[in-house]
Length: 309
Ligand SMILES: NC(=O)c1ccc[n+]([C@@H]2O[C@H](COP(=O)([O-])OP(=O)(O)OC[C@H]3O[C@@H](n4cnc5c(N)ncnc54)[C@H](OP(=O)(O)O)[C@@H]3O)[C@@H](O)[C@H]2O)c1
Image 1 (cartoon, rainbow, N blue to C red):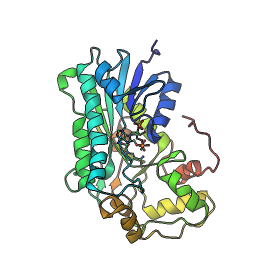
Image 2: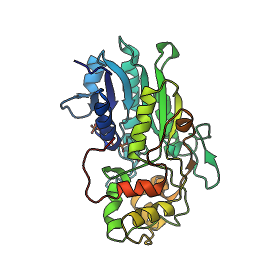
Image 3: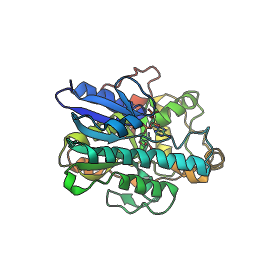
């Protein structure tokens, strides 16, 4: 039997953000059903979704699936780019289609996108009305990803699209990759380190997804970033300080470009200044508004797998 708050169906809910979001939703009293490529308990596969549809108890649908763009073991080939594209656009379309054909409509559809929508720029500050979506592979990807979530207005399902910055948390993503070199004193900025780094603590991105699920005044695009704009160098300094280590060994741009190719290396070598105007305007309160307090939390060497949210 479904919990009193209903069921949240999360495509890609087994990942870094999805796992943290699932724990948090369950603690609040929701049932969580994950759509995954692999079957399991409290999961359905994408073909189950296609055949059986959404459970009638579904109150919210969340789209978080996506092939890891920065997987260093995968070369940036046309085939891999196609995987990156299809794993986001097709899964979001499958969820949208499931909503369209469901007998009882969920209240809200919340989907992931990225700040890569906005053009890298050292001067401009982008709120949700900023331009973008039209200049390189990643920006086109974000544009198509957001459009894949469009639903006909007569369905009366609120839709929220969250442009996520670099998510910082001990359990996954960039910090999990970087904590060992930083702890050994080999950490430092990428390239000059002057490029902006739109970031958010994992507990706050989870908080913004829940804010989007629960607050009826949240609709459309929402920037999923912390209020403090920082550079890559400021991130490296805060991370090093929290670990009591120096953070002066730069990672040269050419090394990033060699490992990842220039097109996707841009995620690290360039950046945008992005502000969470709508999250703040609609009443979201950040737990980690600045990088110093966030770094203290995500630099714990020993950590529990579940987050305290
Ligand atoms: N983490 C960040 O810093 C960040 C920043 C901006 C945007 N985002 C976006 O937010 C979403 C969630 O991020 P995350 O860090 O939680 O990602 P993640 O840990 O890599 O997990 C995403 C999930 O997507 C599913 N997936 C992976 N490859 C897939 C494929 N080829 N086809 C279908 N499903 C696939 C996997 O679920 P199964 O194995 O269970 O199928 C995986 O657990 C992603 O779309 C990501 O692009 C993340």
